[in-house]
Image (tube, rainbow, N blue to C red; front, side, top):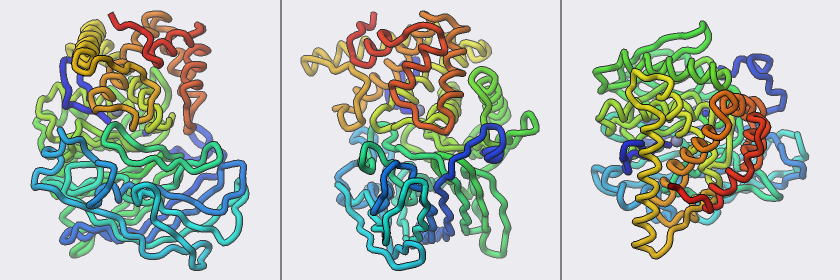
Amino acid sequence: MKKVAFVLTLVFACFCFVGCAGLYDYKQDLTSYDMDILYDDTNHTLTVSQTTDYVNTSDIALSCVKFHLYANAFREGAKAKVVSVQNSSMAYPNGQSYGEIDIESVTVNDGEANFEVGGEDENILTVELSSELYPDDKVMISMSYVVTLANINHRLGYGENAINLCNFYPIACMYEDGDFVCDLYNSNGDPFYSDVADYDVTITYPNNFELASTGNQSTKAFDLVKESNVTARCVRDFAMVLSQNFQTKSKTYDDRVTINYYYYDDENADDTLKLIEEVMTFFEQNVGKYPYSQISVVETNFVHGGMEYPNIVLISDAVTDYETYELVIVHELLHQWWYGVVGNNEFDYGWIDEGLTEFCTVYFFEKHPQYNRSMDEMIASATQSYKTFARVYSSVQGSVDTSMNRPLDEFSTEPEYVYNTYVKGTLMFSTIYDLVGEKSFLKALKYYYEHNLYAIATPTDVISCFSHGSGKNLEGVFTSFLEGKVVIK
Ligand SMILES: [Zn+2]
């Protein structure tokens, strides 16, 4: 995600997997989601039949499977708020509004199943299995549900210009250390953590809408409706945006990747398309291939600057300054590498994807002088703003927690999260860049990417990959930043 509410000079704020025998092989059997969706634009609801072929990737037998119900974070009475107080009026321009997900029925291998909507905040669906599911075995879990959308400029909701359909469906919780990971929604950061999976989605919607999405679409138009079939392989999540206002520009590079730009208010749309191609090709050369055949950049109503999903990024129409719009696009596209292909627990270690994405954004601009942003200027600005944050927080609160390795719910305020994750993350990778030099830094980036394709990178993986890839032991540098011991001068 990109937050722009705290902008100084530096703005703060995931194929066609070219076949499982394609660009990068992925041999493991993946969980797959098959969805049949009807979007009702009068009632702002999604009526969904979903079949999940769930693969047990843990090393123990499971007696149940748990799914996140992120859509329930938008319901009345939710404990976890979807936006901070400061961002509430921008998120809800027409006043408070609520949505929810109502699970109607669940079957396991075609037999009726016991299920429960619970967790700390009605955020978890637990499906009891009729028999234990052994490691590497698969079970078919089918469910029917209705998602009601709130009128909110957020990841899930309808706004004036577009309908954002992200995190709308029950997605399997990761299983780690003997339990499912069931973290609550959080208005800070991106409170998500998921494994790569395959998707086959059919959505029916009024025929005056255009659809932007993860994956590859084929669409049929009828008198009143359109029906799109969308397939995506080996992606970390699945997201869509519908709008009646979209104009589109498309371009294919290397005969391999098609860029789709959906917008409704961009007088520089040709320049934007060019920027998207520059970002994609630059990071393919400098980090590693983008292993899918489609990337969509989508202008939409969104409370923050932007938001990343596999093969699709959301860019807020509230970012009216074009230079900031460019910055948000570069940041969100970089998440295709850092979050999308190389995953991490975004709830526990936001700095892994946000810090690296933010520094790579700085590197992009340094190497593209036509955009008039140098690395020196951006790093000086980040340094200055971080020092201001630390000074203000120290004087107001008496002390400031500058550690980075904290889960989202341990940051006391949104600025504390933003400065320690985005800004300090930028400064940490910038320090490493200066220490090892450009050539070794790029080697480390490539090494980190290649060794974590489609996997989950932990802090230990980041430190060891950057050390190994650059040829320098960087553990001390990383830990001094992560533990808040380094003094930013
Ligand atoms: Zn981000």
